Image (cartoon, rainbow, N blue to C red):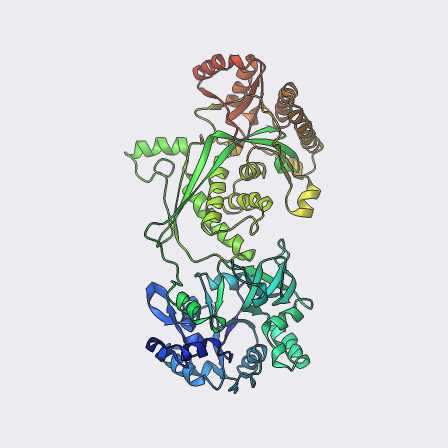
Length: 616
């Protein structure tokens, strides 16, 4: 539940570096800016219209309606300027706090200014505080900052990655626990720093921090030089929980810039608008075949799976004015030749295309970023997809679309594996299907689609509970045998294949529990066999894998067509197993020259048979 929050904007600083340069400049165009406070200097705003820097903050706060009140803290020297601005900008004049100072030497310090607003305006809840003369280079959602704070039990600071040319000596530098987003170390303006995470005056404090810790700090530090937020945070981080949220921008502190730098940023667009020739980010994710160990991935087991070039899902994201999800003309039909056409398509294809997968992925991606302290720039896009993966044959077609969506969104928003570590991406993808669409599945498919190639996966309970993910390892230095795939042209729903085995496993059924452990043992043997290039052993493990699955699940659950494909492959000397949950079988022939004859026989029985091409 969202907590009540107040925002305090600080504009009480007396730094006159830029002001003096404007006054001394021999240019009539600058005369109207002489004496104007830093936060009221003009820059290009939304739709290219010029506005004050402070307008950018006020418009964002006003539009989002996320704050119970917004206050402005200024000094006596510039109070009249802000009073006039407030009258023209629909800002309540009574919400301006005057700290009484008129010179830099007489300042009380930024933290004291903040505390003055808290005391005089009787603020009792959580508070966001920002510097009003700070200019963000890209537009981002301030509501996302508030949502992340609502999920934490601590204070919050905003950070960004230093850009080329920026020095840590100009910023507060932070060290962050990437798994929890908790700040480990804060250092104010160090000469050198091992990382590049930089903090600015953009914080959210809990009510308890505002009422207890900040007054304590002010009591202990009476020198205005020590009453900067950087000094406060250096003192605060060791005493209480402080979390960090990364924003996709950098910040300009206008008061500390040169005149030529201000003139440059003055004409830069602050709000992102779709470019005339927008860039398209296109990503492919590939289908997979489980080679050994599946379906134990959903039972704390181990598996080896392979991504294949034959089948793929592709997602494209292009910046646009509005967010639009484009239905696939074949997979998301909304026009039909008639009721009979609708009946035939619905009976064969069902009601689940890729549109719902894209929508659920976008929702979950935004939710994940918000909960994990990753602010997204406020950019809209058009998303569309294509896929050639046969439906309902257990080749992970749904997760392929979701995986491609996640990867494309990461590219579009410039989210790296530093922001979302690679080992966490499969769990994010699974959450889309399991939590949003209630699709029963395990992690295997998502892991191999993220890591690609031949991947060994260990989902042991101790690993999952300790780390929140399994052990994932690409087996790169191996030679692969000539696998082939056979699938039914008219398959049953692959989601029905698991039957009640999961329920039995959860209830501790010894046959099922021991069977899943056996799958894990087969996987370790498979890893050794691939490493040694022992294809004969790989084939034997595939046979054992299928036989064990048949024993645990039963013929009725496996399905008549699936069993027919297994027997057909075996009649040609093939080692056969399920690559997924049903609808297709994976094979390895002792004599690969038999594949053309097997392919013909498969076609005669209504099956499709193709050689597999690995994707690394």
